[in-house]
Length: 123
Image 1 (cartoon, rainbow, N blue to C red):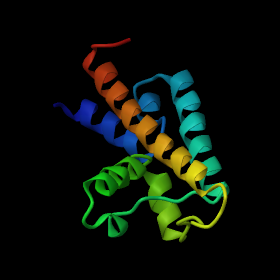
Image 2 (cartoon, rainbow, N blue to C red; image 1 turned 180 degrees about the horizontal axis):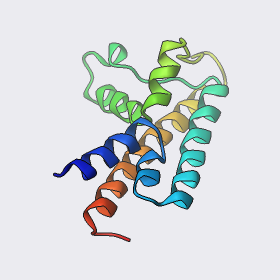
Image 3 (tube, rainbow, N blue to C red; image 1 turned 90 degrees about the vertical axis):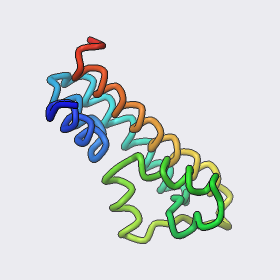
Image 4 (cartoon, one colour; image 1 turned 135 degrees about the vertical axis):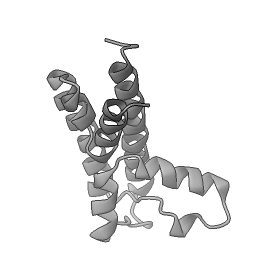
């Protein structure tokens, strides 16, 4: 894997859309940044939570969910640093959790998209 491929994938993971911007796909970058960020912000704003490695001890499914949450990159780390774990007793907790998981998984798919574009396998 060359440096261009690795850098585009890293940028795509850290900031949604940054990898596409690095590869010269400005339109995609803007749309992907907006979609992932909006999903994440909606999830957090409706009391949704984030899976963390501390909460995943003893469960493979929770470990996978933690990796999915972490897929949103910098958004995940900022939210956990600010102490936004969500409110479990809130009626919208599960919906918000689903939004944050979807944002992370979407961003991981976009990392793979950057991989394909940077290798020339996709336009």
